[in-house]
Length: 231
Picture 1 (cartoon, rainbow, N blue to C red):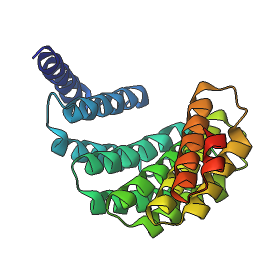
Picture 2: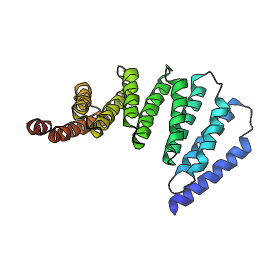
Picture 3: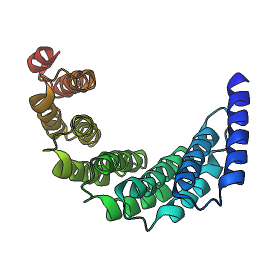
Picture 4: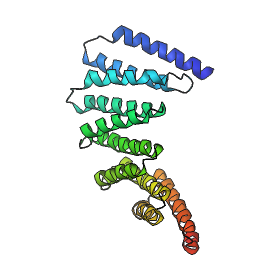
């Protein structure tokens, strides 16, 4: 009840702000209104509120507002709106629609060079792959993960290192589910080779997961000595 009351009050305040300043022409106010719309959409998606079906329309408003902006900080509003809309549609179990939005997002921005947008593109590829996996479209999910690896495997940004490691685990799981265990082990090994000695906590967790998954695959292949070595 406390969470519901908090989010209801939050939505009411944001609605008042958007209603009062939504038509303001000043750039600074337009940015603030956009931030308020993102915050309102987040609150609507809260499990305590349960009004997530209203959020996609807010993301559409943001996209339309800034769709022709050229400046990277403003273009980022469009990227975030499309990405959040796709994730929200996934939460609503509208996965085919979510995948269509991911496709639009990737078609428009995958080759962007702005660091913030690149990180969002890696996230979009990961989430699209997971959506395809949820629909049991595993081969398509693997193709999406391979695209992420082609685009970002040599990236220097730490957040993209985490994305690459995460997708190598996800790709391994998809191959495992298709009974392609040797290929799955290859994906886990690729993660371990690249990030097995990493100090970053997120990469260490992913490496540990890959090592566990590799051991499980080896056990299923009756390669028990290798499985024990992996553990």
